[in-house]
Image 1 (cartoon, helix red, strand yellow):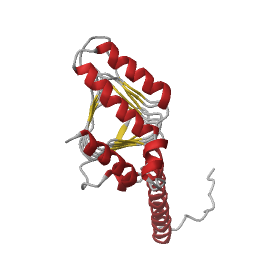
Image 2 (cartoon, one colour):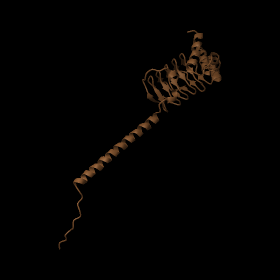
Image 3 (cartoon, helix red, strand yellow):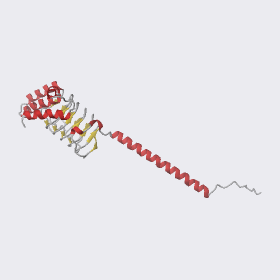
Image 4 (tube, rainbow, N blue to C red):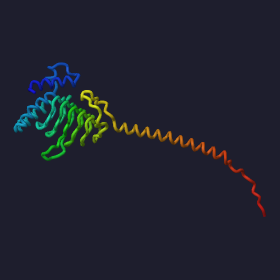
Length: 239
């Protein structure tokens, strides 16, 4: 694909993912997430052609202008959309697939000091909500959703919903959905689910206890009918 075709595809991705986009000129001039991706392509080319310093300088310029830090060594697929973008950090060995949606404040960080694969792999059609962090060489499966503020430290299968600290997989292996259809404001709450389940269980126990008490009262009444209490009898004292 030519550079011009990629640029047109990037612009169409913005229109597809952001209903606030109104014109092509606005998208080109006022979308820092798009600018960061374009800067990264230049930095990544320099990095892969052993012009490491040049790649880092382009990356730093992009960070200064957009507030988005993408290491020139990171591998990014097609149609990535970084919405708002301020504070996004993508590490050197991170790999991002196609049609991924990233919101502001997301970190794709590493945990190792060795020169090895130490950043996450994000597969196609993944949505990462604001403030989430995916740490270490983990793999997030196709079509997964990561809730706002989640801290993900382990891999997740395709079509997972991950929330909490540390990230917990709430749903997995569901039917495929486009990333733009995922409502990240309506992710499940595992704590609320647990409390609701506990409340329902306590209600069931209460109903069961009431039934047991009712049966016990009936049993005591029947026993009383068959065995009336002994009346007091006079005691004859013999001398």
